[in-house]
Amino acid sequence: MSTLQKIFLLLLGLCTAAGAAAQNYLANPGFETQGKWQLTTSNGGSFMILSDASMAKSGKGYGELKTAAGKSQARCTQILTLPQLWGKSFRFSVYAKGNGEIILGAITYPSKSDKYQWQKKATPLSAEYQQIVFDFSIDDPAALKLNLAIEIRGEGSVAQLDDTLLTAIFKPGAELKAVPSHLVIPEGAEVPPITFEFTRDGKKVDNAVISTAQTNDKELAAVKDAGVSVEVFIDKAPVDQFEKLDAAAANIKLSKPLHILYLGDSLTDFERGHNYTDKVNYFLNKYNPGKASFRNAGVGGDFITRMLDRLNGMNGGKPAHRQVMYNQLWAEKYDLICILLGHNDTKLNAAQQPYVTPEAQEQGYRKVIEIIRANSDAPILLISPTSSVYEIGLARREKNPKASLFGNPEEMEKFDAMLRRISPELKLGYLNIYTKTRDYQPAKNALFCSDGVHLTEEGNRFIAQLVLEHFAKGQ
Image (cartoon, rainbow, N blue to C red; front, side, top):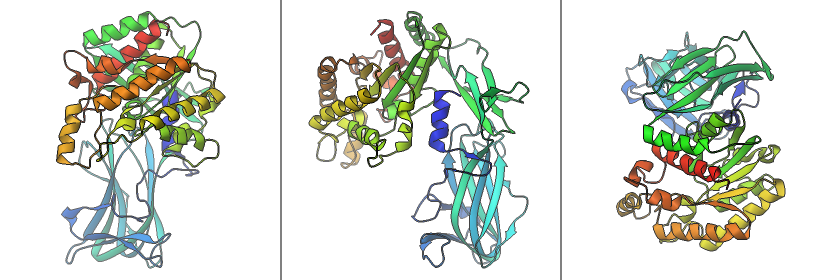
């Protein structure tokens, strides 16, 4: 299994068929707060989240779903976006009591049929909580989102709901690997073969039934009876962009394996499977087969002081946001550690002050470097923040004066100057991508999404190109 897939499994907590140590995919599973669960208005009725420990199965909150007068159905739903839905099986459950009948269902979006999968039959409700369980599989390769439904049936029906759970079902020790885990090819070229290998407890299973499917930009594979799947993103790059990436990679000769740790914010975390980290890995392995690997420990929204908190949280400190992303971080031996931050550190609040002061930025970097060096002897590469489309942020600020303002050039350049200054002092590598993205031709807007900050596919290609060119120089 690739490092990327391991991180996904760790993050999402995919469960065994027995549900051991399962992490719940659902938000607000115990109906303790408002939101996430919504009434389907086309069926009428009402749905409320109430607080009364005597009525809840656990905690204080519970959901109450009622049919409307003269109606025989009411439904509440929650929509989720999960990676690699196709080929997977899930278990959806809820505790319910009341009167009438209850049934669970699921639908994927986009949907071929616009029809739910429902339990084979509804369950009569009673005065005591009972667990309603629905197992289902995803068979649509185009599935991106999952909509889960709790429906009651019968005139005058009312149900109290609590402790919902959604987990993925797979057999322990089962793994499915794709080589390569990401493909970058020039537009118009044929997609080269992808090898899928199924193992159980680390041993290859030669007679495994591996199902495959394709979408416009993905090759998918699954061993459905084991509940494991993998997807390979296929980036069909414009020929000129592909040639620049390929030319940089062709000049990199690895004399030994290279395992890279990436630390960063959403620019590293988002678009997993086809962001710049994946593209760098693909091209390194194209010219050095089997020698390159990586762990992507990026966390969306990160800034240097929270990265420091998470590192300290590994050693008994207070856990930081998404602490799980650093689980067993030093169990792997790295040959290079890359850090890409800046946008969240320098974003301006309503008082026009950066979220992390310049002094705290530098102190945070120094402490982070100290912790890394106490746990790894790998060289460290500081990557400057990207530029951004600042005008987009300004327009958003005009509409909402309290909105965070990203990409202020003055603050970003202060941040970059700090990286330039401390890198030689601390004997760190440094890669400038700020001015390269700022001056990108024909227009830097092509590098960024509609928010002006996050990277498009072209943006991820360009960052990968800059990283590869840096490596090709032996830096």
